[in-house]
Length: 208
Image (cartoon, rainbow, N blue to C red; front, side):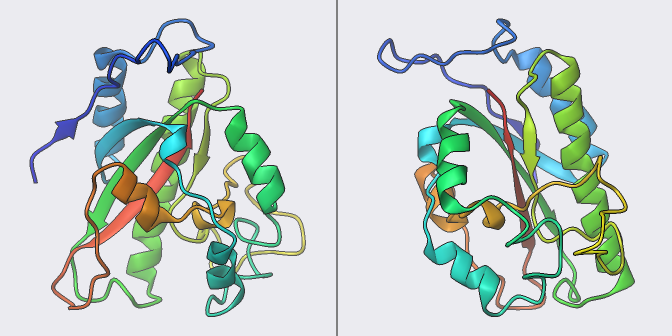
């Protein structure tokens, strides 16, 4: 897969994009993010406007029913904000980054040590890029990570988190319809049905 860095297009006058750092999001910064992200398996970084994010109450149903991490993980509901709070948080941002990575092996769906190692690596990559942005002046940057936190083999929830500095909510815990959001960004995606197919990771960093 060819490396790809997509720069934030110049906003229309009716759609101002404000950066608290007052430095914009330069190609150089994206290059640095991409270089660091590659160390953690992040292949693509796409800046986009917050109005492309689709939020829906039904996403929470997927967390409540059919997911073993509900009421069992600090990165998942009900430990994360409710829909009303999420909408308020999103209203305070205008720009975000989509981080894309993938696995391509036939045991991606299994609960194995190898999968957990990859998941932790990608998780730490999102947090690392968030911190890099913070140090560059984007003080509002916060990551929403792909998949439930796997920093611990078994989460301490409801007891205190063992890694509070790296604790982050998942994309889905913020009621984000990921497929709908990707469609808004012109990205086609599908469920990996065959073992040989590539499994995609999608994380989001709320930027400014």
